[in-house]
Length: 565
Image (cartoon, rainbow, N blue to C red):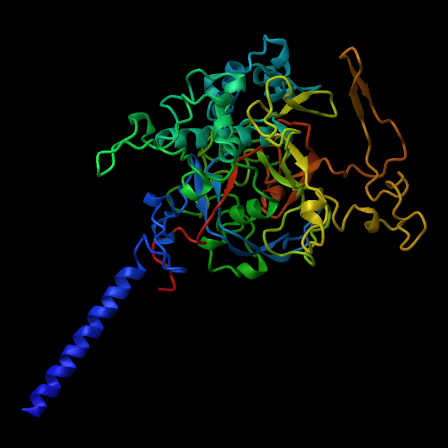
């Protein structure tokens, strides 16, 4: 009898323990209970959602997910040009997204048509916006070549709609990326009920331009403060609902925030490290020693022709095959293009990216320097950081740009490009409030860090009386590049002054950017993802295009199941 009671007691204790653990387990997973404080943090009560209820970042339009990892950045093959600007080094890149193809003429024309509608070039105040964003179609001209067909047709003729856009300088590519960010997030907010339906296409004007950062910082200032477009909450248009007691409670001003998790990070140009990592696509070529960077092209093998039985001998990229040979002999062995070619005409690499070698070379975000400073950083390497913050007006409110004070960037050739449009928040450099006693950065502009600043030049005198006074002289400057001055006089006329000095020693300055990948004008040597060249950021060519990238927030992998589980 005692044995039976003992067994029964143990059974009851075990059941109690199991029920208790199950209860605790269920409670710990509740979306309404904080794991840190035990408080009810239900979003329904104005709190926060449990982290377990948040979704992973959605893939933006046109993008492909690139899982980050380590790779050998730089050239392993013979440096026959003797540039010595891409010595191999080990780097790590975080996961990100990249455009499946280069930005096409059709995509860019959508941007131009939007600008023409919102900022009519016929109005005096906006006359420079559309022109400043338009590609330079004259890049096709050649003193001893007949290329007027491309000059007149390449950008706008439907036959070239899905060809990569060219004639776009680095500054224009950055502005296109910013415009694309606003249009994508605008569509997301509308889809999720935070904006009036068709807000992105109806009643759009310069004063009612949408800006993601303005919406996040001050929603009531978006669309020029038009409350009919910016809804207070998802479903707010339906009106306030009665509570369980039948009492009607006015809905609070609840807008989409970063914590809502639906807005995407900005579209931008990829960094050089991201572009090279994505082009090499070591993820699918494990038979190569990826730590030594033995992969020569975005595809497998050391040849430019396919070795597969189905398409053996076909060219895998669009490039110049020799003097006077831009495509090969007409027929099956031809690469299919005289100039550029339609996107997706050649096989994608193992990340699913097209034309990471050939067709057009591509702008990346980095300012060019001949040395990659691996001693300072080997994680998400990038040169070109200029940190800014939102400008606060004298009234203590955000300084939102209006149609009367649109910010322009004057290029060295005198062309004006709109840098900040109406509806966006004005930016100013960070100051001592952000940099004082920091270890990771001390200035707003970090372009010259350790390579181009005063301490970098051999003429710098450590501890000298005048070492820290003013700016360097031309003799002391590390990069003594030409300086072409452009300014507008009091009458609004453009004054250009070309630098004809014979004492210039380099073309490198803070306004030259890296471009990657070979183009239809380049020999196979330049198809190697490790190759790097530079070009002035405010100039354009007929062989440089671009594609956008986007940072990934959250987990490294987009797999639903962790490989460690």
